[in-house]
Length: 225
Ligand SMILES: C[S@@+](CC[C@H](N)C(=O)[O-])C[C@H]1O[C@@H](n2cnc3c(N)ncnc32)[C@H](O)[C@@H]1O
Ligand SMILES: Nc1nc2[nH]cc(C(=O)O)c2c(=O)[nH]1
Ligand code: SF4
Ligand SMILES: [Mg+2]
Image (cartoon, rainbow, N blue to C red; front, side):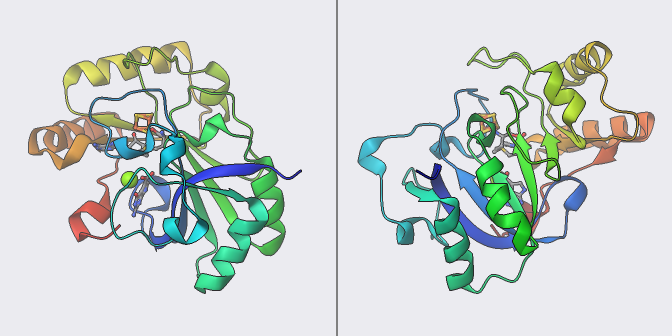
């Protein structure tokens, strides 16, 4: 039997975060996350409720955020990309926490067709991704769910993208980076939480001081998905 994934939504847009900002992308958002970040902008993806299960058409180009999800195989997902006429070749797997699932069957279906995969993850689950998947680790430190960032995820990361609002968040990141240093070529970006002006000022100031990058969730400034 082929692997099936609980999918919250599939849509095509511009990647608004991190190193691939500006790249046309198909987003595949998986349902379910136990990490519990209080400021999470996708809290509707946290729980996988049987009552919220729908068919494939209920998760394509959704009009707005909802808890509804559909169970789709890798083959279903490819068929859907074709039906929709999506042009992007960059596929962002996000959530929820997509690293709770084995993403290798999805990569095995998509990569031979010329798609490049990127995963957005908190780094709290063992990564089951293809060798060519771009791994964006957005470390989650001291969150209510009690999950810890895994050293193997920090090692595998192709970029580190860290949400910040206060100096104590930067201090916690410094602590993580000293315990689990990423590979030397890996870029670090700070992402202000929810476009708050004070968070943005702190991120800018710290990026300049550290020679890190700024990631501003471009889609929220553009009012697109
Ligand atoms: C919604 S998460 C889903 C993927 C995965 N669970 C994770 O945390 O990386 C996608 C990205 O959005 C970031 N994010 C979530 N809520 C945010 C907010 N309110 N402001 C800025 N970034 C946020 C996360 O840190 C992560 O980089
Ligand atoms: N445009 C756009 N870019 C994104 N980059 C990461 C996102 C996410 O929710 O993981 C996201 C998203 O939801 N929309
Ligand atoms: S790990 Fe990601 S999806 Fe989960 S609560 Fe935190 S930001 Fe939201
Ligand atoms: Mg988002």
